[in-house]
Image (cartoon, rainbow, N blue to C red; front, side, top):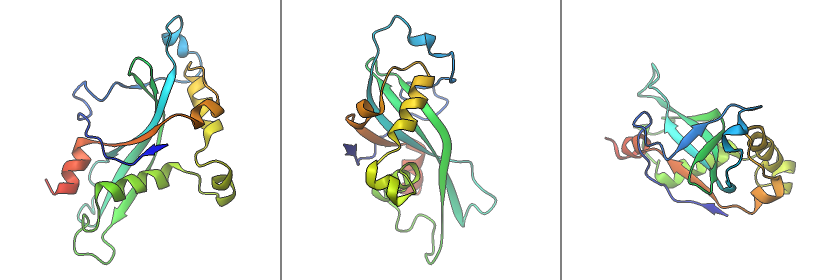
Length: 164
């Protein structure tokens, strides 16, 4: 299940980034050892990337995917993806963009490019499960398939969309 609603979130650097935690793979999972934590959800977080030299013509966005644990902590599984939107045939970069179109752009970024893979898996579940296990989270790809998935847009991105 994918929740297609924008969620407002605190700004990065304020200490309230929805409990997003970057955990290094391989050997760093001991943080959860002895704790009864389970993965109860997955999601993607999208934020503005710093302005580009052609800032009036294009804007880039970062996308990371995370696992949500029973205690509310979110563990980042990967953060190397993103996308850029440009003016094209419009007069302003924000023209035609909304929270809904941004959520679809995020999903386009994280979902498989390969049509054959997309027909089998709407998401790369085995890869996400291996990333979670590398961070000490005990979960299988079959378990991940059954979890809710949400896309979160940062406050700065919501303000940018509004022109503020």
